[in-house]
View 1 (spheres, rainbow, N blue to C red):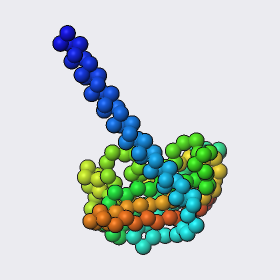
View 2: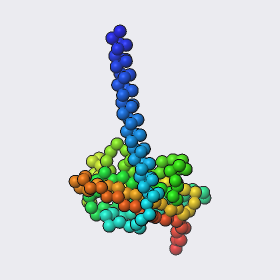
View 3: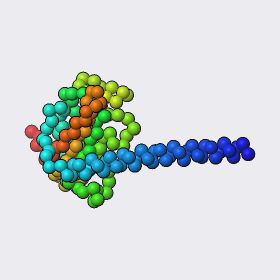
Length: 172
């Protein structure tokens, strides 16, 4: 009888933990949807930022597959709880059949960019690279970068419109 009660207690705790995990994932998914919608509804995009460097590159993987990389690095201010979302070619949320490249939305750890501070164990990165696979050698990327200031009081949000195209490197 004691074993049955113990087994039931363990089962109840496991179900409770699963429920909390499901609720957290659902909250993260709602935030992802809100950010996605905010990017699509935005009409003022930048090409660069005064707070950090952002750029995109394209590499050819095969005749029919290319990989783009969006790089956010070289912070000029302290950026805490960084969240980044990239949308390819203006795909609507309804037709996007996969989660778009993102950082800080589904992970359990915090992502921070602070000038001259790199400590991955403590969550301080030099920069972030987000990538995705596409079939065309040119892609338009809408990017949103969100972060909090050093006191984690004010939130800053910037939107970027980056178009990147693959081009063969000519070697001499």
